[in-house]
Amino acid sequence: LMKSKTTLILLTLLLVSASMVFGETMKVYAAEQWQQSGVYVEPGDDLRVTATGTITYNKSGGVDIAPYGNPDAPEASRSYPLPGVPEGALIARVGYENPFFIGDLFQGAVQTRGQLMFRINDKDWQLSDNSGYFKITLLTDEEARAAADEDERDYYEKEEYYEEEYEEEEYYE
Image 1 (cartoon, rainbow, N blue to C red):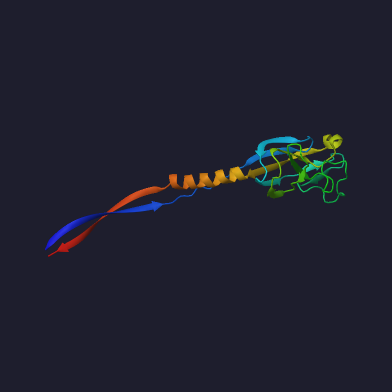
Image 2: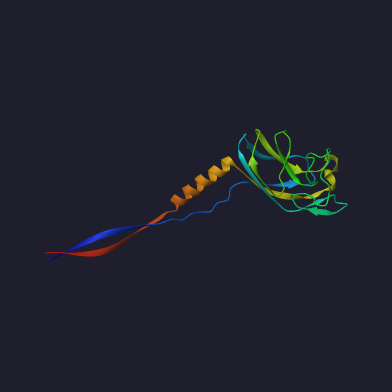
C-alpha cells in the first residue's frame, strides 16, 4: 500500500458588509429667509428630505412646532411663501422656482435644475420673531448611486480570506 498525503486548501470567504450613511445635513433656521443647501439637482432627480426638531414660531406666542407646521393655525394665506400649507412648516424650492412642502418627510422627483434652498413658511417681515431650527438630511439620486457603489466596494474590500490546510490520506494498492 502506498500512502500519499494530499494537501487541500480550503478557501473560506468572510463577507463583511459596511453600513454607510450618505446625505447632506444642515440646519434650517426659523428666523432666516431662504437658506442655501449647497446641493444642486437636475430635472428628474429623486429627492428625499427628512427633518427633525422643533422651532418656536412667534416667540411672543411661544408655539413650539414640528417641521409639518402649526396644526392649530389656519392654512397660510397668499402673503406667505407657500399659501395653503400650515404656517411654520418646512418648505423648499429649487433655484428661484415655486416652493414646495417638505414637512418632516419629502420624497419625489425634482422638476427643475438648480440649488435646493429651505426655510419655514412664514412672512418675510415676521421671521425675526421665530427661533430655533430644523435639522434636515437630504439624499439625491447621485448620492444614492454613490452610496450603493460605496457599499459594494466596501463589501469586497473587507473580504477576509484565510486558508486552512488539512491532510487527506489516500491509499493506493
